[in-house]
Image (cartoon, rainbow, N blue to C red; front, side, top):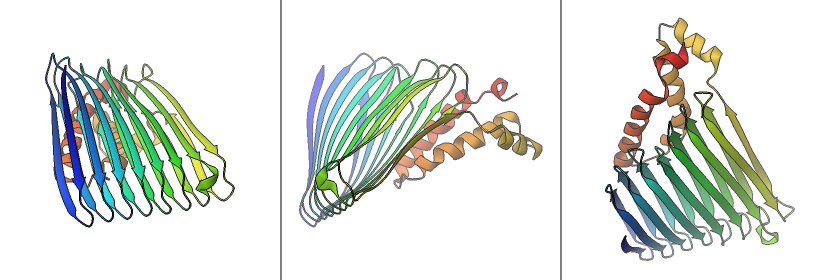
Length: 287
């Protein structure tokens, strides 16, 4: 097993842009630790790009601390040939007036698991999170998420969308925790899942745990198939079944991919989506 430790520190008031490329080769096991620290009023734009091929095992631990008034935009894209096993643990802490905008796209793997723990420690901090998971036969993806509000007037907004083709398997466990010190919280948690075949399986469990009175909170989940009325409408406009299905799936997924504001990460995510659409929306499923 290979082990590596990386550290990114952005000085107070400084601006920085980083591209982190992680290649996972067949037959290798990786264990890596990434520590990121933004000092007060710092700014960081980070692209985290994973590519795997063949049977590989990867475990990544990310420890992220965002100082007072600091801003971070982070896009992570995990692309795998389908045989890899990925496990990512992220610990996030936000100080007062800090902001984090984090988008993650994964194509699924033999096992693709992400554990995300966000602790909002400072007043008026903001956390925005978007995730897209795409799975077909033999692929499984999981997201285990907790957002904890420990300070006043903080905001969090999380949306996870999953596209499951034939034989795809997914799991979402999301929780918002608001302690008594989290008065004035504005928190949103949502999981939407699109099943493209009866053999796809999705488990979803959104939760709220609130110990404060002055809060605005919402959570929910929805799982279903493509809208037959929309498919019929597109086919009456001359589209083939494949084209109609692909358009609707892309529209569903683009709610997340459109949030990636980095050209390289966006191109990688779009390529994954196009490739997976060719597998996940075959002609016979739309007939």
